[in-house]
Length: 195
Image (cartoon, rainbow, N blue to C red; front, side):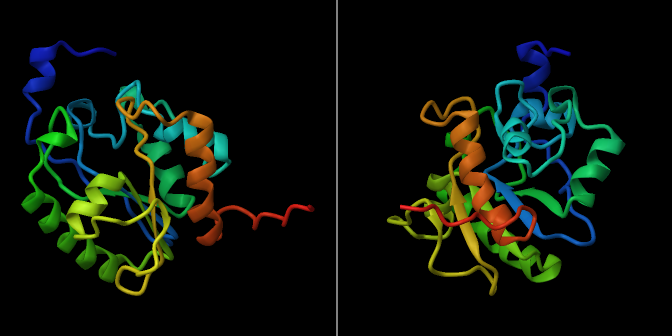
Protein backbone atom coordinates (compact mmCIF):
# COMPACT_ATOMS: atom_id res chain seq x y z
CA UNK A 1 0.00 0.00 0.00
CA UNK A 2 1.33 3.38 -0.95
CA UNK A 3 0.07 6.94 -1.04
CA UNK A 4 0.81 9.80 -3.38
CA UNK A 5 1.97 13.04 -1.71
CA UNK A 6 -1.33 14.78 -2.54
CA UNK A 7 -3.28 11.87 -1.03
CA UNK A 8 -1.28 12.11 2.19
CA UNK A 9 -1.69 15.90 2.30
CA UNK A 10 -5.46 15.42 2.24
CA UNK A 11 -5.13 13.85 5.73
CA UNK A 12 -3.47 16.92 7.27
CA UNK A 13 -5.16 17.88 10.58
CA UNK A 14 -7.08 14.57 10.70
CA UNK A 15 -7.33 12.89 14.11
CA UNK A 16 -7.14 9.17 14.85
CA UNK A 17 -8.75 7.30 17.71
CA UNK A 18 -6.75 6.35 20.78
CA UNK A 19 -5.97 2.64 21.00
CA UNK A 20 -6.84 1.81 24.61
CA UNK A 21 -8.93 -0.74 26.41
CA UNK A 22 -9.51 -2.48 29.72
CA UNK A 23 -6.49 -3.82 31.57
CA UNK A 24 -4.23 -0.99 30.38
CA UNK A 25 -0.73 -1.47 31.82
CA UNK A 26 1.57 0.52 29.53
CA UNK A 27 0.42 3.66 27.72
CA UNK A 28 2.67 4.77 24.87
CA UNK A 29 2.28 8.43 23.95
CA UNK A 30 3.40 9.63 20.53
CA UNK A 31 3.90 13.28 19.68
CA UNK A 32 1.14 13.47 17.05
CA UNK A 33 -0.09 11.42 14.10
CA UNK A 34 1.87 11.64 10.90
CA UNK A 35 0.04 11.81 7.58
CA UNK A 36 0.49 8.07 6.89
CA UNK A 37 -0.90 7.33 10.34
CA UNK A 38 -3.91 9.52 9.63
CA UNK A 39 -4.42 7.87 6.22
CA UNK A 40 -4.44 4.36 7.73
CA UNK A 41 -6.01 5.22 11.10
CA UNK A 42 -3.12 3.36 12.73
CA UNK A 43 -0.60 4.79 15.21
CA UNK A 44 3.05 4.79 14.14
CA UNK A 45 2.02 3.47 10.70
CA UNK A 46 4.66 4.98 8.41
CA UNK A 47 6.67 2.14 6.81
CA UNK A 48 9.92 3.73 8.09
CA UNK A 49 8.68 3.99 11.68
CA UNK A 50 10.42 1.59 14.06
CA UNK A 51 7.81 1.53 16.86
CA UNK A 52 6.19 -1.85 16.15
CA UNK A 53 9.45 -3.53 15.08
CA UNK A 54 11.01 -2.36 18.37
CA UNK A 55 8.06 -3.66 20.43
CA UNK A 56 8.36 -7.04 18.71
CA UNK A 57 12.15 -7.20 19.12
CA UNK A 58 11.82 -6.34 22.83
CA UNK A 59 9.23 -9.10 23.29
CA UNK A 60 6.54 -6.60 24.32
CA UNK A 61 4.46 -7.89 21.41
CA UNK A 62 4.74 -11.54 20.47
CA UNK A 63 4.49 -10.76 16.76
CA UNK A 64 4.98 -7.72 14.61
CA UNK A 65 1.71 -6.43 13.16
CA UNK A 66 1.36 -5.26 9.56
CA UNK A 67 1.24 -1.64 10.69
CA UNK A 68 2.10 0.14 7.42
CA UNK A 69 -1.13 -1.04 5.76
CA UNK A 70 -3.13 -0.24 8.91
CA UNK A 71 -3.86 -2.56 11.81
CA UNK A 72 -6.74 -4.97 11.36
CA UNK A 73 -9.18 -5.64 14.20
CA UNK A 74 -7.38 -8.81 15.32
CA UNK A 75 -4.06 -6.91 15.57
CA UNK A 76 -5.72 -4.07 17.49
CA UNK A 77 -7.29 -6.60 19.86
CA UNK A 78 -3.89 -8.32 20.42
CA UNK A 79 -2.23 -4.99 21.29
CA UNK A 80 -4.99 -3.92 23.69
CA UNK A 81 -5.21 -7.47 25.08
CA UNK A 82 -1.48 -7.33 25.87
CA UNK A 83 -2.17 -4.36 28.17
CA UNK A 84 -0.76 -1.79 25.75
CA UNK A 85 -2.42 1.50 24.85
CA UNK A 86 -1.38 4.15 22.34
CA UNK A 87 -2.33 7.84 22.25
CA UNK A 88 -0.73 11.13 21.18
CA UNK A 89 0.07 14.41 22.89
CA UNK A 90 -1.44 16.33 19.99
CA UNK A 91 -4.30 14.80 18.07
CA UNK A 92 -3.96 16.55 14.69
CA UNK A 93 -1.90 15.01 11.90
CA UNK A 94 1.03 16.84 10.37
CA UNK A 95 3.85 15.90 8.02
CA UNK A 96 6.41 16.59 10.80
CA UNK A 97 6.15 17.09 14.55
CA UNK A 98 8.16 20.32 14.12
CA UNK A 99 4.96 21.88 12.70
CA UNK A 100 3.38 21.82 16.17
CA UNK A 101 3.42 24.87 18.40
CA UNK A 102 4.54 24.85 22.01
CA UNK A 103 0.96 25.86 22.96
CA UNK A 104 -0.40 22.77 21.18
CA UNK A 105 2.06 20.56 23.05
CA UNK A 106 1.11 22.15 26.38
CA UNK A 107 -2.59 21.68 25.66
CA UNK A 108 -1.82 18.08 24.72
CA UNK A 109 0.01 17.57 28.01
CA UNK A 110 -3.12 18.70 29.88
CA UNK A 111 -5.29 16.35 27.81
CA UNK A 112 -2.86 13.53 28.58
CA UNK A 113 -3.12 14.28 32.31
CA UNK A 114 -6.91 13.91 32.09
CA UNK A 115 -6.61 10.67 30.12
CA UNK A 116 -4.12 9.19 32.60
CA UNK A 117 -6.54 10.02 35.44
CA UNK A 118 -9.35 8.31 33.53
CA UNK A 119 -7.47 5.31 32.10
CA UNK A 120 -5.13 4.62 35.09
CA UNK A 121 -2.28 2.86 33.29
CA UNK A 122 0.50 1.39 35.42
CA UNK A 123 3.18 3.22 33.39
CA UNK A 124 3.26 6.04 30.82
CA UNK A 125 5.96 6.05 28.11
CA UNK A 126 6.26 9.24 26.05
CA UNK A 127 8.18 8.74 22.81
CA UNK A 128 9.77 12.05 21.91
CA UNK A 129 11.94 13.95 24.38
CA UNK A 130 11.58 17.38 22.76
CA UNK A 131 7.78 17.14 22.82
CA UNK A 132 7.90 16.10 26.48
CA UNK A 133 10.23 18.96 27.38
CA UNK A 134 8.06 21.53 25.58
CA UNK A 135 4.67 20.12 26.52
CA UNK A 136 5.42 19.62 30.21
CA UNK A 137 7.73 22.64 30.53
CA UNK A 138 10.70 20.47 31.53
CA UNK A 139 13.48 21.94 29.33
CA UNK A 140 16.23 19.84 30.94
CA UNK A 141 14.38 16.55 31.29
CA UNK A 142 16.66 13.59 30.56
CA UNK A 143 15.58 10.51 28.68
CA UNK A 144 14.51 7.51 30.73
CA UNK A 145 12.43 7.38 33.88
CA UNK A 146 11.36 10.79 35.14
CA UNK A 147 11.56 11.84 38.77
CA UNK A 148 8.09 13.38 38.69
CA UNK A 149 5.16 11.02 38.00
CA UNK A 150 2.16 11.99 35.88
CA UNK A 151 -1.01 11.90 37.97
CA UNK A 152 0.73 9.44 40.30
CA UNK A 153 1.85 7.18 37.43
CA UNK A 154 5.56 6.56 36.66
CA UNK A 155 6.71 8.19 33.40
CA UNK A 156 9.47 7.26 30.99
CA UNK A 157 10.61 9.57 28.19
CA UNK A 158 11.94 7.51 25.31
CA UNK A 159 13.53 8.11 21.91
CA UNK A 160 11.21 8.72 19.01
CA UNK A 161 10.80 5.72 16.67
CA UNK A 162 10.39 8.00 13.66
CA UNK A 163 12.66 7.37 10.72
CA UNK A 164 13.68 11.03 11.12
CA UNK A 165 15.45 10.12 14.39
CA UNK A 166 18.73 8.96 12.87
CA UNK A 167 20.30 8.20 16.26
CA UNK A 168 17.92 5.35 17.09
CA UNK A 169 17.93 1.81 15.75
CA UNK A 170 15.33 -0.91 16.21
CA UNK A 171 17.72 -2.57 18.69
CA UNK A 172 18.31 0.59 20.74
CA UNK A 173 14.59 1.40 20.73
CA UNK A 174 13.75 -2.15 21.81
CA UNK A 175 16.16 -1.83 24.73
CA UNK A 176 14.72 1.55 25.77
CA UNK A 177 11.09 0.44 25.40
CA UNK A 178 11.68 -2.71 27.44
CA UNK A 179 12.38 -0.65 30.59
CA UNK A 180 8.85 0.76 31.03
CA UNK A 181 7.41 -2.57 29.87
CA UNK A 182 9.23 -4.29 32.75
CA UNK A 183 7.95 -1.67 35.18
CA UNK A 184 4.41 -2.25 33.87
CA UNK A 185 4.74 -6.01 34.37
CA UNK A 186 4.62 -6.81 30.64
CA UNK A 187 8.15 -8.25 30.62
CA UNK A 188 9.99 -10.17 33.32
CA UNK A 189 12.33 -8.19 35.55
CA UNK A 190 15.87 -8.05 34.30
CA UNK A 191 18.34 -10.20 36.18
CA UNK A 192 21.16 -8.19 37.75
CA UNK A 193 24.37 -8.62 35.77
CA UNK A 194 27.37 -10.13 37.49
CA UNK A 195 30.48 -7.99 37.62
